[in-house]
Length: 95
Image (cartoon, rainbow, N blue to C red; front, top):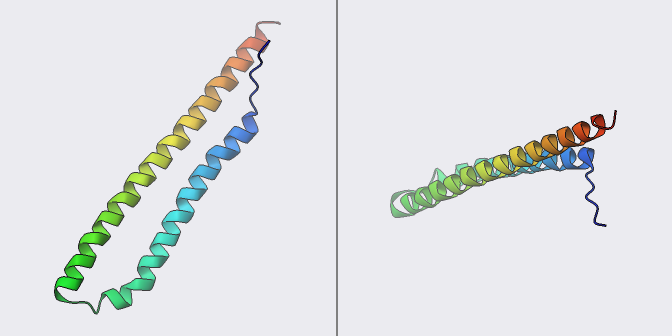
């Protein structure tokens, strides 16, 4: 007989880990931008334009990744909650 087991606490920790990873990534990228800002501010002309165009692409990619990670976290949390509710209902059916 196959058995499905859930560790609700571990799943919740995983959901929080996803959110924390996204936060750490955003912090690291923000720190990198701040580190580069003095140098970037000296660029002019084509070099400045090319960098800004690329930076906009990176910013959009970061935003898309944030949305994906947020959605994954929501889905993991919803799945955990739904299975926890199912588990409680199953237990209550025996009482």
